[in-house]
Image (cartoon, rainbow, N blue to C red):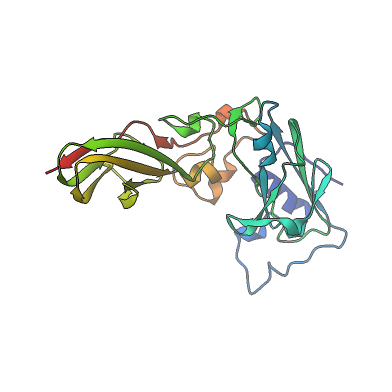
Length: 286
């Protein structure tokens, strides 16, 4: 019969464990044999979690219909989105073996949307964790969190400033250049590279990876004269995707607890720059 509103998931999870009769999550401690896995709770115990997210009225219909939401261990819950049930068996594996993604385009609407997870009885495996909204969209900061808006064409520069704040996968940049004479190798240098790494492809063939300063790669092999295509596949960071979003430095289990007690404006979240900020520099080696 107790409830709390507007909490970060890590604080909501800690409070729930206390309400279930424990000092905190048992998953942060040590397990002897199966003492945690086999932990049982009253048949009358219950957990109801509600997540809210906002869609802009300008979000294109195709983007809205393509939305999915990923839930950790959905088989533990009765799931509803905007009061419409979702069969927990219909999700497809996403990200890891405990996550399932569900198509939700037919259930969402402009404005506020509410996802409800209900576990009755409560299970020791019911940790309160983030749910992930997946699709082709951009995020705009609002007074509390973000609103899902239409995707925008990417340009050179930090993609976290172009609506792709939590994006951690790959953006591909393609450049055409012409070599006026034969060369034995090509040096590719990135003046500013942001993200985890950049894979270099020359004329469709993978040539190597740029990981660290001086952010350059020598592509050995004969380079005939003529037109060529250079492709850079820049991969974002898991920190932008999973956080922590309010703490810098080395990430440990405690750093996710460093966050506002209630959802702040989207402008207060911290992200690491990601994306190619300038055109690559090329030098042929004769």
